[in-house]
Image (cartoon, rainbow, N blue to C red; front, side):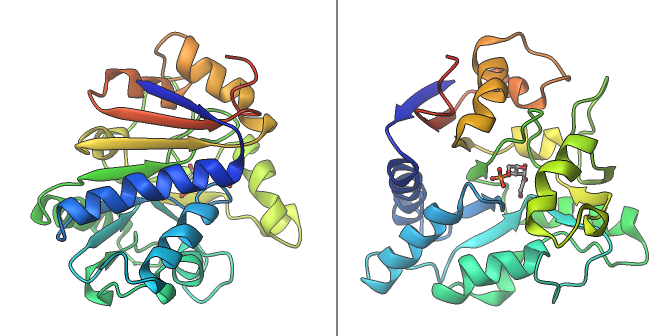
Length: 241
Ligand code: F6R
C-alpha cells in the first residue's frame, strides 16, 4: 500500500485526476472502475477540465461503477446513475455504450449481478479502480461483516452508511437500505487501485485501514493484499496516522 498524504482536498483531487489521466493516456481503451460520493467530485471536475482543454480523450474508455442504490430510479437525483452523469459523463466525450452502472431496478437482481461481472470480464477486467472509503471502512458498499462477498451482489447498508449518506437526502427515512455493489473480489481483481479519503470524519477509518490488522471488520484493510494500491489522503484524513 503506497500511502500519499497531501495538504488539501484540492491537492487530492488533482493527484487523483493525474493518476486517472495517466492511465487513459497510456491506454486509450482503459477500463476504469469508478466511485461516487463527495470524495471523487473534485477529481471528476479536474478530469472534465482536462477534457475541456483537449488534454484527454475518453472516447475509447469503458467504465464500471462500483455500486448503485436499490429502489431509486435512474432519474432520482441521488441515484449514482444521475450522479455520474452530472459530475462526469455529461462533461467528457465518453461513449454512452461503454458506461456500466449496476442495474438495481432489474426484476432478477441475481442475474443482473452475474451479468455485471460477466461484462467486466468481457471488457478484459478493470485497469484502474477508484475507491472512496466509508466512515466504517467500507469500500463500494462492502460493509463490515464476518465474511465478505466476492462478486457483485445485493447488500443491506450498515446503519453508519445510512446515517452518513442521509446528508444527501431530505431525511434519513429516504435513504435506501439496500444497494448493489461490486464484491471484494471484483475490486481486488483490478490491476491497480486508487483509494481516496478526505476530511477528519475519515481519520479513524484510514488509521484502521493503513495501520490496523487485515480484517473483514474493516473491508478497506483487505487492500493490503493488493499488489498495486495507492492511497491518497488529505491532512485531515491522515490525522491519526
Ligand atoms: C460510492 C462508494 C462508497 C463511497 C464511500 C465514501 O460509490 O462506493 O464506498 O466511496 O461511502 O463516500 P463519500 O465520498 O461521500 O464520503
